[in-house]
Image (cartoon, rainbow, N blue to C red):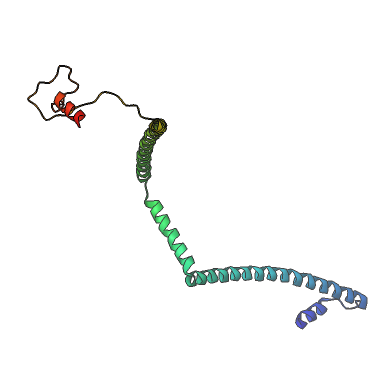
Length: 191
């Protein structure tokens, strides 16, 4: 730096006043400061770029180290790679076959549901009929219970059972039973 100042002093003409020299020094100093500031900005931007690159490198190294240490992250990466391989391998016909198979299963299930609905409707109708029948039988039972409480009326006719097959069967046959003869009827009244 002193060498440069001596060279500048040698270039100056002799007989310059001290104020002129001070002004020249001031101008040189301003020029040097401006140049230094310009170089500082360039260096700062280079340093910033260098640091950003290093920070990015450090982040990448930290991420890789984290991936190596973190089992879940490694498995997620492996899963993504596997999924990509499978996605590349699957063709449109595979997708179409899966879709058609799903449609067939859906149609089969809809058929089963329809059949079950029909069976359910049949069972409901039968249940309703049985319910109606049960109600009518309950009413009939109640009617017969009331009727059984009434005094019994005796009839003057009787049916006779007999073991005699020799005797003639009267012409006014009451039933098709061969044991029912007039003699058996008389035996029943003799007691």
